[in-house]
Figure 1 (cartoon, rainbow, N blue to C red):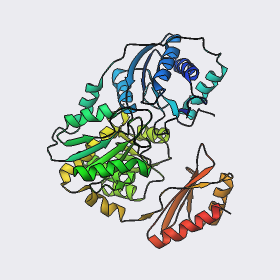
Figure 2: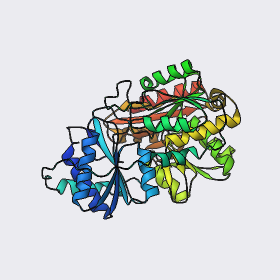
Figure 3: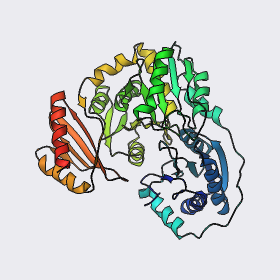
Length: 444
């Protein structure tokens, strides 16, 4: 697959990702969709602007109508595509990857991601068969700024918000700093934005919010400001990780329990989709709140499609991605939307965030994600399946095993010689014992 991955196109600039590829991707995307109007945006990475211009050149070469947004977050581009009725959208981004990485996300007329299983393989084949593009100058289009409309949409979620809440937002020097600064100005909260300036060097910390180093500044600022919560985003502003008023990071499945509480209060009986590496706390809490918990494979495309298929109200991934149903035809991935929902909950409940999370975090004991380097991934999973044959086994995504006092999932990385293990148990002792047992089997 090379730089063509399961969900998008991504790699190191100069090692497969360059202007020539961007031009070809633009052309192939237009040929694949066969539609007329396209929206294009880019993140803050060092070479994203030139890749953006080259991709636009490819779309124009196919005779398509192209509108640019310039530097934007992925959720803002996705919102604009749907609300303005564009046939397709192309975002130049490498999301949460380190600075040398660049790439592209493609969206079809429904706003769904063009993954490898849904056409990206065909686009790759078109690109590989395409002749080298002729030398071209910079391609430009008229750029639109619909940010105020996007902010109207987000801020409308909390028309009655009237509180003294304090919030810290860290856009990680990515493409969403301007968006969140303006959003906080719209909301009736005291807000501080750190690392707001877009800088593709990501000088303050890695753009992956799952890394501990990426949350240190946020935690310090939350304590200094006396904030009620803080959020850190990834490079293109779609993934969210939250810290409480004590500066402690909250696992996304606990955060999603709180979001589910707020959303289901207004729409009881609705479905919520979660990925299979989530804590069991999440589906239990959804059921307690009179919602319907639906299981999904890990990954944007699987979860998004499951939401659309079921008409789900909310979808959430352990990695920090969150998705919301906005209308019968529009589903959005949006960290900004999640922030407003959380603010509404805190305002309504009038409790500290740590107090709301504590009973959720104390139900079970998690191992966290353990990455195991191994070449024979399938052989190791086969050993796991044979050894735990007495449990309830699923092959929906890797191997999932469930017993009464513990359960775990082990699944292969799509891009690396790794297995990823997550285990949860009813006691600390069982967690430690069973984690060691699984690791020993894998490493045989």
